[in-house]
Image 1 (tube, one colour):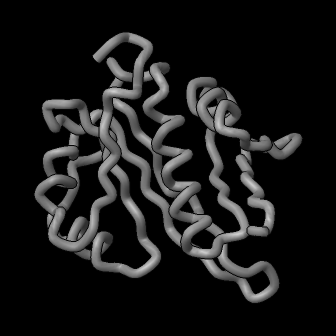
Image 2 (cartoon, rainbow, N blue to C red):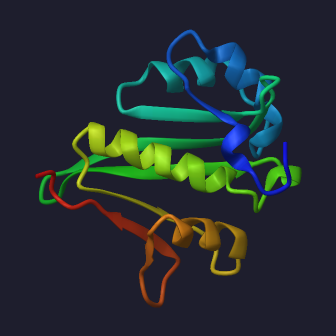
Length: 150
């Protein structure tokens, strides 16, 4: 892949039955993916996982999101985790994944999307900002607000 071109990656939305793809992407996660937990995550309504794949099918990034509903706020998407292979960072992969999850959130009727990150995680903060996020002042809470559909 070209050093600055994330356009050659393919985004794949995983669903039930895609556990093998998730297991193959295990090096991108904090710890090895557990088969039973992968199956459980992919089977749960409102749980979303996207893989970014090189043209050869190798997973180079992922994002997971979970729909959350609160009685006074409605439905929102929580970005549970975002990971990109070290040699693919700062090339637009994370931004593509974030934008794609935001699209799913809108499809599902979410009014917004949010996550938290470490205050010194400059790569993550830059990726979120590049996709239109607002960083809540004094925090590391990242917020996306979707305007109502016309």
